[in-house]
Image (cartoon, rainbow, N blue to C red; front, side, top):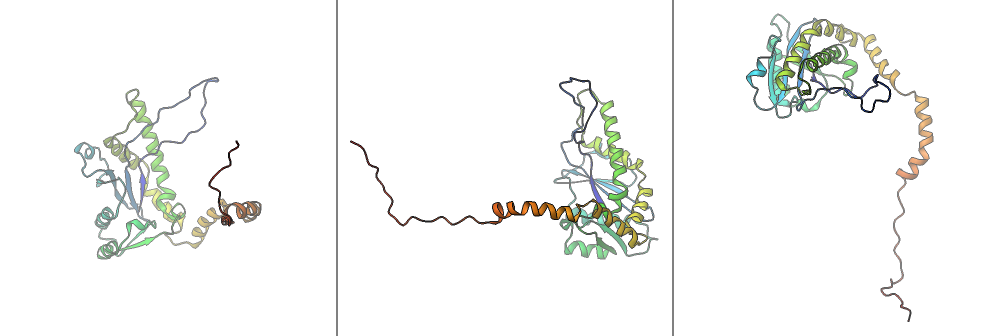
Length: 269
């Protein structure tokens, strides 16, 4: 189980333009809100219908009409992010969505976000026969199957569909409303081959089937991308004197003058 945002404007990049062009630009969509998609799938390829979280206390009917994924839900929180109350409700949705033929307890692999956990959450999961397994902090890009194998395809579909929306829209209209965002997210969900990719993600991460070799390979990716130890040491040796002098060394305390300060100044006559 994991969450992902709807769409982020692309960062600036190099483009091909006519020489001496003074103003090179491109149309990019904007959203005045944050929308979260809750995704969940199993190592067997079973996919739990997504839940889209919008900011607000109510959801209008025109938004619900754009939901094209069977079983998907739309709800709201004050910020559009997943919170503890909604996570408790989602656990019930998750437990009910998994077929009863699947042996309990269910193992739910998630990131280590502490804002979603409490004694009430653990008790509720226990009643539902769900065991929460938290991945190491700051390591979801290495061991979270959805991050590794699903979300890249999903977001790629989102970008394509958003660009199509721009091409088909009225000139100068680049704002995406909530109903359009949900509709685009549903189309991207159906086109990202979620079931196939999530199975591959579990295997690549070494979660199922359990594989220490695959897990170590994921860790090696992190290690290889890090700065070599000898370079880190050399950089520190160069910066150490300046750090000691400017940061670690406390200034001398101010000394008070023992003499009496003059309160008058001589005036020449």
